[in-house]
Image: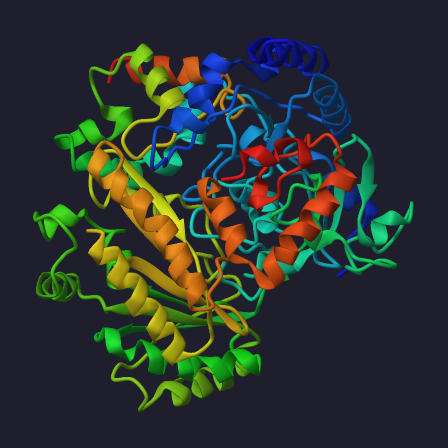
Length: 512
Length: 105
């Protein structure tokens, strides 16, 4: 059967499951499910169609039919993974399995502090739900809140409360496998379990993490721990005027993260990251190439911001926060030239500025930095929690950005024992030269990072293979293991071929 | 705090807020689905102010918008705005929003 006929036949079969209104044909899918921030022609890696089920049973039926038709599926939750490919698949000969209609908040247990969610639930939805019902639990969220709570946690997204390492707050998954079976992980493997969202491990091997950044199954339900609303939060914000002060600040923060004084994830954002939320680059500089240092310094002073800007937020009891705030201030005093600006929030006050994430899409505005048709690629190496090593990574990567003609936009978000260095190549999609430079820069960043012992925590769909190849210990033992598992659990390779560089046997010819 | 089982049951199986109810008008739909970016203080309005004069950046006040144009922009995206697909915003709701934005200001 010709390829197009095969996909048409599969979409016809899917339409009999979900109804024709919930199937998108190739002509529309080429733009509706394309990468909105694409660094190249988005149609070149857009899918051949999409199907949007509303229930687990429909997902199972679609997976089975996909296997029969030899058509692979690319699951997305809400498709807002901007900078990493959005809703776009790794290969175009695929049907997107759009889970956005599965958007129920199935349970919120206030006493035990968790939610059970479907993949289509957005951060905005969860926030509205918690606040409308006066539930004293806080979610954690990334910079913009359009995306899926489930999808973001599964991609190991990062937020800024003590629960900001989202993947670590997952407890219990329901998964449709590549053969259409249904399983539950952890304690959920016991029918009628009373602790599915309480004890993360179950009995025997624990598989939750194997379904994160993975193509081993399709997650249809996810348990997520939510943080009890604190009595008080304290914000200690600082603007470092000199770029060279970054290492001292990182080293001052490290012991506070290690011993738990600071439980949230402070993020050291550079000056361009701050400026891009306020204006376009043209307001400061109209020349080509990266902004010269003297121009950037003038822009920084004009905007009244630091070269690095960050906030240490403390969550908890007021008295304990007061003690910890003194501890934080003492740790930084004398190490850097700036002082903290302190503010406080107490339970019962409006949530704005509390540290509780509020619905916001403002972070998307940075893609207008260069005007035109904004786009971005996110490059996210992990750094040791060391000022010296972060400085080395920053200067090397910044230099590579600037050599390629881009402004360095980035920041270091502090985990408990690591730093997520999240950088963005911002470009104007209407300028082919800029896209060409971005496409050449990105693989160079990957290989340079790997040579220095730095791996990416997440990457854009177009570069899964390059990043997977950089994880090369023992000649790629991890990739061989992943693909052995993939072939065993999804023998037809139905689910997301190529996701994270994991290719099922039938599709390995497509590896870059 | 242990809440009554009945209360917890009430919480179960409720759709996400954004899809919870069908808007009764294009204005209501616009405010519910678009205002996070296109309110007067939204980031999209700030971006449009860099390109358009006066109130024209505020979509609810902009003159000269046609429903057809609105629908193309929503489905395909434009500038820094990502496209919004049918599964996220159904055709009927998009029609209502487009007619509202086309209407007299």
